[in-house]
Amino acid sequence: MPFMECDTNKVIARITRNIESHLTNFKSKTDYDILVSGGTPGIGKTRYEDELFKHLENNQD
Image 1 (tube, rainbow, N blue to C red):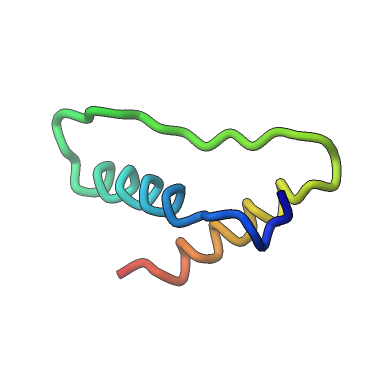
Image 2: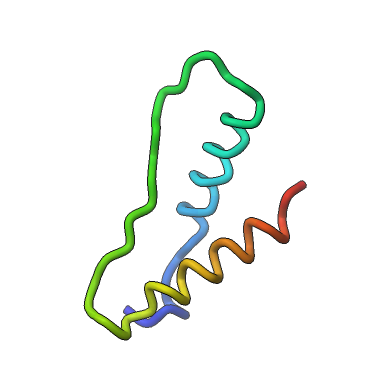
């Protein structure tokens, strides 16, 4: 699927929730999600990572 058609909202929401949980020192965590990106060369893994982290950096409200 081309990068422009990817829905990143769920991924961004989950990563943001995990970061906020870590930063607020919650005692119990119900999940420890990680993002794994795999696939053949040229499908947009690095671009996806770059765009995701750029979005997270720019939206640290």
